[in-house]
Every structure is written in C-alpha cells, then in structure tokens.
Length: 284
Length: 239
Image 1 (tube, rainbow over the protein chains, first blue to last red):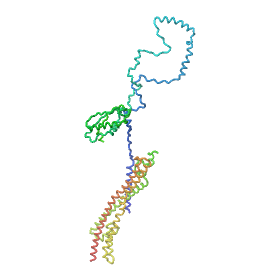
Image 2 (image 1 turned 135 degrees about the vertical axis):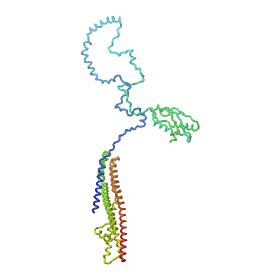
Image 3 (image 1 turned 90 degrees about the vertical axis):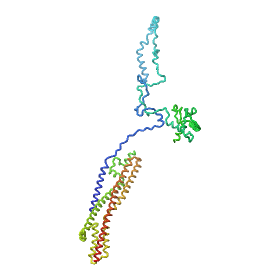
Image 4 (image 1 turned 30 degrees about the horizontal axis):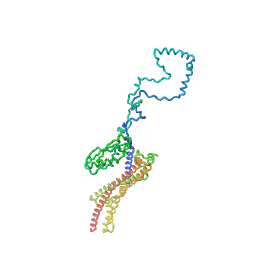
C-alpha cells in the first residue's frame, strides 16, 4: 500500500535523524576526572607517639644530620694526616747525613783534646761574674711556664662538654610540634586508670558520688610495685566513705605490679596520684 | 600481568570514548541483537503510528463528508449512484452494501420482503466488521512492543551486567573502569527498549480509543439507516 510505504519511509528517516543527533551529541567529550592530590598520612604507633620529641613537622630535611654543635670552633679541625711510609722518610733523612756529617762528626781527636784543654779556663773565668743559665740539652724539652698556666685553664663548668664544629646546628629536628618524651603518655595513664577502676568496687547506691572521690598517692619502685603504703589524700566521713576508701586501697594493692608503665619513664611515675571517681564508673 | 593491562585487554572500551557507536560496537553479540531488534521495533512502531494517524484522520473526514451528504436531503438513489462508482470506505461502504442488497431485493422478479430487513442488517454488520478490522489492523504490534520492549531491553541489560561481572572476574579488579563499560552498554539496551516501548504504549492507547469511537459511530449510522430502510420496507409492503 502506498500510504504504508510512505509511513515507513518517514519512520526510518525519523530514526536516522535521531540516531545521527545522538551520535554527534554523545560522542566527543571525554569525562576527565582530575586526579585528587594525595594527602600523606603518617601512621604513628602509640609508642612512637609518646616518645616524640618536640620539633617542627615541616622542617627541611637534611641529608646528614649535622653534629650537635653549640660553639663555633676557632679553626677547623685538622684533617688527620695519612701516615706516610716511614721507611722512605728515614732513608731521606739518613741519606744526606753521611754526606754532610763526616767532616764534623769525626773531628780529629787532637782538636777535641785541644778544645777540652781550652775550655776549663773559660768556665772558671765566666762563672765568677754571673752564673750562666743552663744550656739547652740535645732534646728540646716542652716549655713550662708557670705564669701561663692560668691561661690554659678552662674556667667553665667542668661538667660541661661542648662539641665544636664548623657550623652550629640550629635547625630544629623533624618531629611533632608538641612532643614531650619525659612524660607519661596518655595511653599509659589510661591503662593504669583502667586497671585500678576494674579492681575498685565502690559501695553501690551512694547518693552523692562527688563525696566519694578518693585521691591516693602511690610511690612506686622501678619494678612497678609499691615502694610505700598508699596514702589517702582525701578525707570524708561515714561508713560508706570508709568502705570506698578501703576498696580503693585494696585495688591499689591488687593491681600491682604496674607493668603498663614503661621503665624508661620511671622518674615520671615513681610518685603519682590517682583519683578514684565513682562518677567515672557509673558513667559507663 | 598487570591488572590494569588485563582490564584493557578484556575490555578495550575505556571511559574516554563512550560514544553511542563504540558503546554498540563493543557489546556482546546477544546485546547487539537485542539493540538492533529494539531499533527495528521502534522503526516499525513509528511507521504504524504515522500510517494510522493518516488513516484515522482520513476516515473521520470521510465520515463527516458522508453524513453531510446523507442528511442533506439528497436522494438516496443518487447518492448510491455517485458512491458505487468507486470503492468506498467506512460509512459509505456500509451505505453502499445496504443499498445494493435493497436494490437487488427490489429488482429481482420475486419480491421477497420477508427477510429483507434481516439481510440488510447482516450486510451492514459485515461491512462494519470489515471496516473495524481495517482500522485496528496492526494495532496489536503496538501493544506487543509496548509491553515486551522493556523486557527485551532488560534482557540486554542483564546480559551486559553479566559481561561486566565476567570482566571483574577476569581482571580481578573491581575498579569502576572495569565495570563501567559493561554497565553502560547494558543500560543502553534498556534505554533503547524504553525508547521503543513508550511511544508504542501511548499510540496504542490513543488508537484503541479512536477505533472504539469510530466503530461506535459506524454502529450508530448502521442502526439509523436500518431504521430508515425498515420504514421503507413496511410502507412498500403495505402499499
């Protein structure tokens, strides 16, 4: 049928047009995703974190850490001379001697005898007016001048050791901006607190928990055990406070040795105070 | 072998060229067949739709013209003579069929009025059925494409996603660059299915109601004409 053929042709033409448009409009533009800059993340373990020294995170990195120097040296330290082969030197020293020495070294025995004969009268004559200062010996001795001893003394603190070098090391070391090695790390404090809290049984049903806050002073040995009986620093009254306090003391005894504390930081925890707060317990 | 290289070798389609043609070209042959089939369906649907739009418009205008001529007071004999010369459609076809039967009954030697009424109604029913059949021919294609198109597209999608999972398994790499081409081609199949199915459904609903309306109109005319002829038969039979 003619009409149907026309309709089919129109339909085909329509689809061709739509496809052509789609081909043109969909192609071409590539979707470029600009890569995001990667953020460097440092993973620091708890141990490293607590041992961090103060420094600047963005300090320039040095190829070789400069030696720790506080004072400029007057002159650069002399490079160590390479030991030369001694045999050659000796030969060089010895070699000229045979040429020059024989005339002097071996004077005729008559001449010495003559000199010896001549000298005695000289000595006698010279001794009288003034004593001749002792002549130099063959070896040059180190000079010893008592007046100059003071100049040689270092008047600074004898304990002090100052390294000297060409360049004083002024650059800060790499590290966190807040680092303090010689302190208990938070993880150690938390571990200690958790240990004590798990062992402490405060009386249940207390009305005012703030009245049952107990501070205990602990003096510890290097091995983490108590050096002295724990001292209770807070006071209160009533049966309940007494039982809470006793429980806290028992907890301290049972918790030892405190091996969560590092030996290296013994100075910081040899004498510490611990707070037992019932509100921390019931807070969950 | 580097996973990235492997992904390149498994699927040479990179994210940089997702044009329509490459999308089609790198698809599995089953997905290609689905896409081509759906494209053919779309072409066919639109051909039918254009054809039917023209047909229904022409039919409606023809009916309007015929009704105008019919009720203009013109003699039915004259109208029949002018219409029977050329093949007629719709209302004219019904009128011509009924008039032919009427004339045959009168022109034959044995005047048989007894069954004339029934015969005329039969003839008009057959004419109406033929006209309705002509109007709703190939509408079923639209209905089929409208309902099955999304499913066919979905089949292509499922196949494409299977391909993309196979490429994940082959390259042992779950990055988007490995998965994306397969999914893009899969979704393209569904898109073509929807593009074919949506117009098909809309046209089918529109044309079904149109056919219904025109059939009602034909029925109405047939009843009216039957009433007129019945009155004539009674008058002549009595006379």
